[in-house]
Length: 114
Length: 114
Image 1 (cartoon, rainbow over the protein chains, first blue to last red):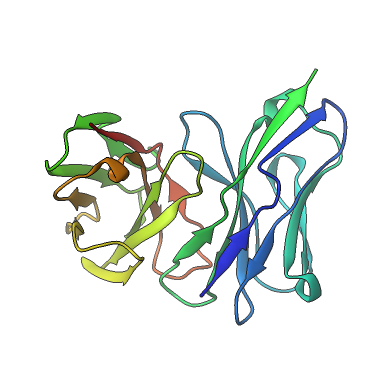
Image 2: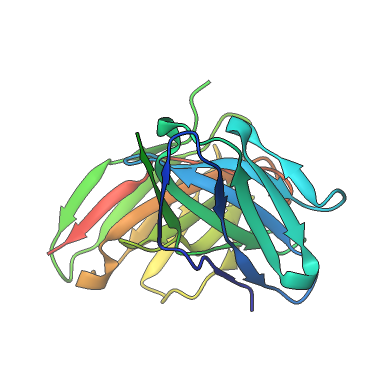
């Protein structure tokens, strides 16, 4: 069975500081990996995804993530955080087949200090 | 182009009642998935509909059922509601049933069971 762990429930960073959100997954084969952002009262928006190829993937809003198979990790990074980045972030894993069942972590809440 | 829409936005029910939630997929999308997001947790996959059939199902009891109509819209039905069903119910749509096609999420229906 596939699973996702986001070790940090809540992270606070100062505006302009760098950010790294951790994600560890468990899956028996090559996974599809995703990062989503959810603002209050909103649905989830896809930030980036990894299917294959280059292990460093670029996403929207200046985010990037690196797939490390040896560590079963897919950490999300941003070099300089903006106040508007405050939200909840979810990592998800899916089988690389059809049907698209995604398994999500429990999320990390990001607070940005002015 | 309207994205994924869900109705109603909020709903309050009492234990034992039944509820129907509705989802209209993004234009051009024929696959609909439903997720349950309890407070403080990540979304959990309920089931996915493609070509009017349930294609995959998560670990949810038979009280949760669904339907997809010829126009690809979908309903989620929950019978015999209990307090633990209180959650945000998210609908997501994608074109085709392949995982690599990005799924788009609606804003959700907030269900409160008293």
